[in-house]
Amino acid sequence: MILLAPLPALLFFMDLRERKRLHFYYYFGGISLVLVFLYLGYYQWQFGDWLFRFKTIENGDYISAYSYYDKDLPTLYKRLTYEPILDLIRRTYWLWLTLSIPRIYFGVKNKDEVGLAFGLCLTCLLVGFWWMTTPFQFYSPLPMNPRHLIILIPPLSVCIALGFRHWHNAIEWKMALALLLAFASGYCLLSGDWKVGLFYLLFSGLLFLKQERILFAAMAAGLLFPVLFSVKYQHQLKNYPHFLEVLRKETSEASNTSPLLTHEFIYFSSEVLLEEPEFQSPIISMAELDRLAQNPPDSLTLFIYGYYRHAYPAEQVYIDKVEQWLEKNYDLIYSEQGPWLSIRKYRRAMKAN
Image (cartoon, rainbow, N blue to C red; front, side):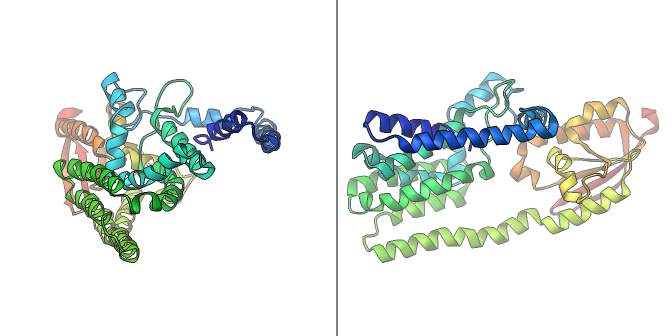
């Protein structure tokens, strides 16, 4: 809703310029004001603060590997310039964006209402992802995670479906789209991601199929196969049931005097993972090492989930610091290394007392 907030204003100014009837916007504006008043009024009535919801979001912001307000200028520069493009390529959204271009182009050129509306919708989402800040007190853009980007799919799907006729019988458009996909393929192959690279290369070739039925069937198969493959791949990568079982077992054996030291993303999700919202779990984030070092426990368990290398590679910095600190101050008394989990139990060394 926030990302699309500028859309009604943009449509209003377009209709105003074209001197169209504006009755819709009068009703839309009036109903929107009522809904906003009711929404904010609820928090004023329940909590005594109109902005309670916004303040809780603000207070819930924390420093992590994926926040930007605490990073240096080069990191922020990358996030605001070319890094989103690379993320869209790595997450395979580049295919959807590429195939949506013809409809957006002809929607603007021919002043087609549907094409313009969905083109503006997509523009609002992309601009919001690219430059909008999540908190109000400082500038911190939204991380370009797949779960955030998935909202792009509805407007992209409409643009792709309506734009098919524009490029299917135009060799110039086919060449342009194929070059964009080949560019994405080249980047992925050079960076070592051969699966996504071949995915883009496959679709750049499928564009030149002339028979519609064969083209649709080939594209459907090209989209379906990675989904089926990813089911097995994700299971092998995460083995979530095994992770959850071991995490609950280790947490039940831990205590405030012998805590479980683990990843930040596990720490912040512990209430959901353990299904005990009110339980004060003895879990400490590796990002809080400095605080832990001020009052080190007599023993602790280091719980490393191998999935972090895929989803949160930046956490390697925390792991390196923790391992160095443990080596200086603790003795390893138990170690279990598996394909998904690494569990090490430590006892404080006598020399560290």
